[in-house]
Each structure stands twice: as C-alpha cells, then as structure tokens.
Length: 213
Image: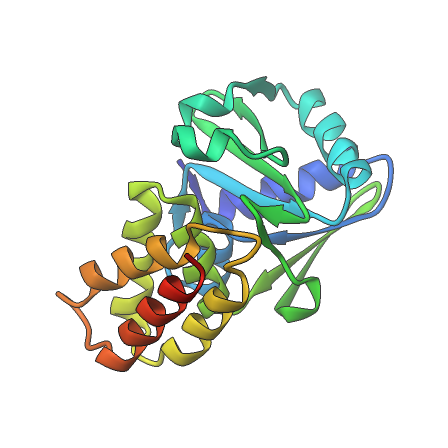
C-alpha cells in the first residue's frame, strides 16, 4: 500500500526520471487521496492526453523497477474487448493503471479538472484531479468491487453529491459507453442502503436505457 506521504515522494521521484514535461489526470485511489477521502492506495490510476505522454511516463517508471502485467488480472472480461485498454505496470504490491484519453469508453474531459498538483524534478509532472461526481462515474465504469467500496466511501464522507449531474453525464456518455447506465444504476441501488437517492434519478436512467435499445 502507498500512503499519502509515499505517493508524494513517488511522484516527485518519477518527475526526476521523465524525459519530457507531461500532464495527466488522476482518477482512482490517487484522486481520492488528493480529495482527502482516503489515505492509502494500492493502485494509481492515471489518464494521459496521448500515447506519447503515457510512453514518457512508462519509461520513467520502468527505470524505477516497474514492469508491465496482464490487464486480465485486474479487470473483468467485458472490459478486455475494448480497443483502448489501459496498460498495467507493477512493482511488488504497487500498481499503475495507465489510460489514454478515456476509461473504457468514458472520455475524460481535461477541462473539467478542479485541482492541480505539480511534481517538479528533472522535468515536471502535472497531475489534475476531477470533481467527485466524475470520480463516482469513472469508478462505476471500471466495475471492480474495490471501486464500489471507494464510491461508498465518498458518499459516506461527502453528503453533497450532485446526482442530477451524474445521471446527466451518464446519459450523455451512453453512446460511447453502452453499459454505463447499467453499471451506474447497480451502484446506486447498493448505495440506497447508506444514502437517500431520489426515485426520479432512477426513472431517468430507466427511460434513457429503454430509448437506446
């Protein structure tokens, strides 16, 4: 596991091994740590603007002893059918999940960032984090049990969740991510045990799902 201090030190170290300045977006445990929702993570999920930036990052972490692993050990089979899959790199129990542009069809909007974190070494590693609603959506898309647990953590800590925005975005992303409404609805049903979610949000999901069949 990597704690907050470890993460800061690791990212600064990676900046020392970069050959170019690069920018990416944190979407997983790292984003949750930046938001203050948790203080440890096993995997660092990052989204890059293009493959070149991801390759620059990979060269840096390979110098630190990380090596590529099979995606099948992390994600369900339905995610493996997509063309734009993440690359997985690990060292011991630490892991990077490295995406380009989108997360299993869910395009990450770099302009929707709310925080900026600069790690300066030989070059500069700039990591943005997205708002909590996008974080919930992206964790619904990945469909790992660990990601549901993270969503639950967010909802328990932060009572001010904009479900209207979340449902709107899920409907907008339906074309490029066919299962997003199904995954989101499943998580929302589970979340009803710990938080109140209006029936109207479920009704909108069911209507949108029916219209796209």
